[in-house]
Image (cartoon, rainbow, N blue to C red):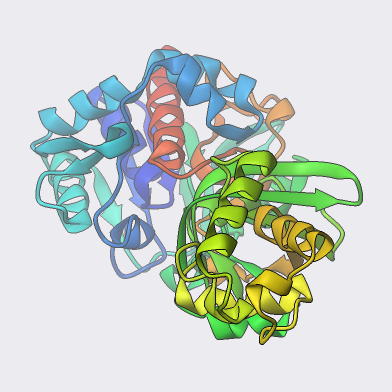
Length: 408
């Protein structure tokens, strides 16, 4: 029987504790908060999108940073394995649109509850309000951890401290310091899956407006950083919504400002859009221009499009020139918006960057520099898109590290 310490009582830490304890080891889980799973509790607006039931190749395609590193983790413990794991420990699950898996109850608290009960059944020692201050390392081998007042010895240590997003949940980034002190390279952290700040004043007038089935393109100079289709939302500071959150994860190391373009009618080609405009203009030929777009656009958006098209709002539709119509067409197919940066970590779903995976064994999650030291979950330089994929990374890396300790 080995003594194993796990630092961090989030999604990855709890699953790792269960796996290591199932193999008969003496497991102690150290959590600095007053309760376990604080970030897990708010995941998916409190519903907890556990995973996404797709094959491994599809899982890999949803990973933004270092996807190839996860082949071993995902093939060892894929999304179906994750669902089975939770069902076995007493959580009823359901699959919704987009293959997303949720607890049947729609309560993230139920996810935490079954994990806690499973650990209790396996006699995992859980220490809350316990802050780890460092790792005890001797001769390139981890020997335990330092708390504020004592040293705790262990045969193996798993670091599952997460990132620095949602700092109100207690995220401190301590795991990066532990890794750095152990000699690991840390890739610069950045907010991922986060809303974006914009420069234009007119954005505030659109606060609360949701656009569905639009295309967003983000460009730095002439290079396209992201192109996606879906739903977005205007806010008092800029833009948000699923399309924007996804796009934000492709802006790592970007120098702002950059240009965004919103295609309001992506399913229509420029030629089809022009025919649609001609049809509407014929129908409303005696109306003022500002009153001729109601069939085409949400009410809130009309004054903005009118302003950006540079057409006099009181001009009669039948007086609009071809040049003016083409300028309107350009605005509808590429509404320009200037991105000046990301929102802060408290609004970021995940943290990009972290422990450099080149220094971690992908088949075990053990450090290549320090024996018996493992890193799992968001503390690593791994991140994926929305839809349960980041939690799957947490579960898969936790499972693989858990069974690797048995073999080591």
